[in-house]
Amino acid sequence: MLGKIWKNYGQLPSSVEYTKEDVLQHPVPEHVAIIMDGNGRWAKKRALPRVAGHYEGMQVVRKITRFANELGIKVLTLYAFSTENWKRPKQEVEYLMKLPEQFLATFLPELIEENVNVRVIGNRSQLPEHTRRAVEKAIEETKHNTGLVLNFALNYGSRAEITYAMQEMAKQVQQGDLSPEQINEEVVSSYLMTKDLKDPDLLIRTSGEIRLSNFMLWQLAYTEFWFTDVLWPDFTEQHLLQAIAEFQKRGRRFGGV
Ligand SMILES: CCc1cc(N2CCCCCC2)n2ncc(-c3ccc(F)cc3)c2n1
Image: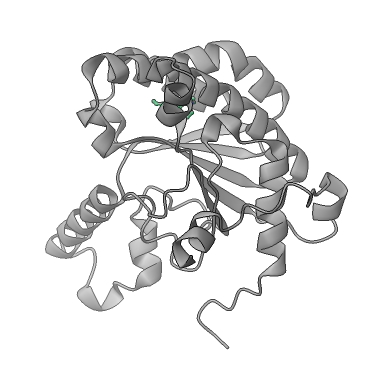
């Protein structure tokens, strides 16, 4: 029974609907992070190839980005490809690596129109040239935008990020530009790929999986989690409203009483 409660945690009876006005009565989370899971399962349920789920998932990225911007959310971080995803079948990885350029070719003009600022965290050097070029063009063309920060985690792994930060700090100490006594949580955060962003206030994970999957392990220390069985391709504005409404009901204590 407990497992059932956990697995449906955050998935309210369909009778409970929220409106945008309901949610705008209270402060919305400034930074929302989403692990967009369930794309392959969505396709399998429909006897479609897995890549059909990824394609459908990409349409939801556009819809939720637009709605997050409307709600006044400041940062939306989307876990698009993890360092572990390279283990997937070659054809699937090749398809996934084409999605950024496909998404941007279709939606970059709209994102620019809506003042969205596209950023990427992850190791871009290991991406195919065509993927990297598309992403860097979007970063460049939106770098002055002051609206929603749309932050894609692409070839991202939190342990790799933290390990790289430690190596960089060790180099600074070795060069005499940093002393061990100076290293505190603020300095560590400044060596991470998210150094210019506040930590996520709300983490959403779809498809019923209840784990972090090597995502923003340092940054999520005080983040509220909202899990839902909904598969990412089926995720709607109403689900985002439900997650935010639940977030607004919780009293965050950041470790205090
Ligand atoms: C590289 C893997 C990947 C997968 C993917 N999926 C598939 C898996 C998750 C569901 C969403 C659709 N999307 N959707 C948008 C992007 C994207 C990334 C960077 C960027 F600058 C613009 C768009 C994306 N990237």
